[in-house]
Length: 161
Image (cartoon, rainbow, N blue to C red; front, side, top):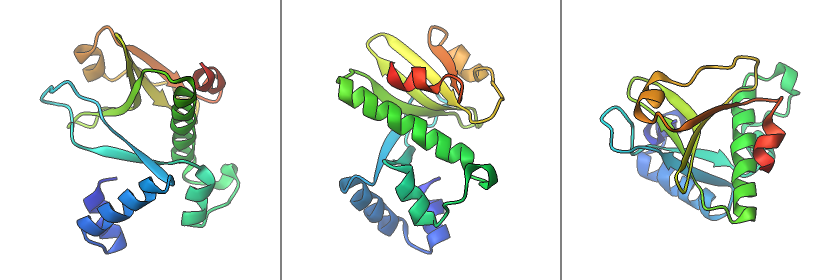
């Protein structure tokens, strides 16, 4: 969600929202990852995504502790969990990787992109059974890059390697 849109929903100015996000990041409640791009015209470069360090804090802030089976935000919870646990693991190992998300102006996207050394991998994080193909723009722009779908059946291998 864009800062301007978040500000509208909260009836706050963009600068106020940015100050709150900055404060929450400084006290380790949230963290951000930036957009991946190689200056291709179709890629969105200046946006960022925010993740909670702990889903429990996220749930407390929105006042939702319902079981997963009746929640309408399971996909967002799952994505936050996977990205955060992967980031923790990479930090623990001292891995030389950088994390991004990827999006184009025509709404093609990947939830997570990891770049390390000569390796580039895109990840789609799905709670459900759907296993999407890589976005056409990703395949065209980065033909040597990997593409993986992370789901409940393979997530432990992903966050622990």
